[in-house]
Image (cartoon, rainbow, N blue to C red; front, side, top):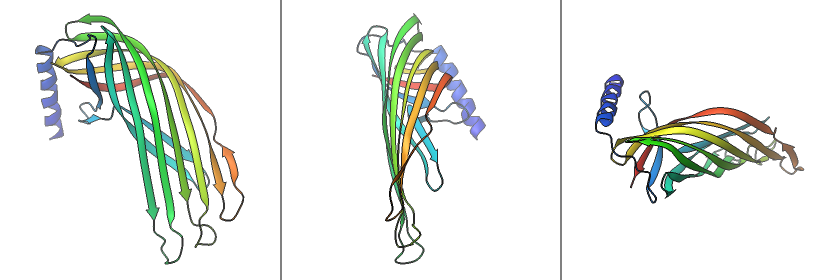
Length: 229
């Protein structure tokens, strides 16, 4: 069944090449952006996402949040993109024994991903572009497991921030009127820093800095599906 669906999608794309729409790159054109799963994982997903994993002796922060993406042409062939990321999750695990403390785990994050794109070449439904972007993401979490005295809780509080800059080159192809598929390569760097505060129940808070990280290199963005209006 999955292969049949994939084949139908290929036929739709081929049909789109035959009946492709005109590229929308004029001042005022705007679009909602989605990540397109491709043939092996059909579906349109959030445009951007961010994941943070912070393991420690008793506390593990592992959280993913997703973003809503948009594109807007400020001038002919010159567009801005933006994605607002936000997520929140709270879990309470009830104690096995009545009167003991519950285990609580709450996580939250938000961020922005902003970019500018300038079209280098346009031919019918095909557009090639270059650009650059900036992004930051903030994560925080609180974990309260049972202390030595099972009627009380220890407390772990973490916070982390990621910041990045990138240059990019890519393409966009309008398979139908107001619908396009695109992809891009990115070259950039990201930095990451943060800390964890550990407070034993009734004890003194100990602050530990997370390892600072710097990453430089290429990355690929999966196919982007854009719906214009």
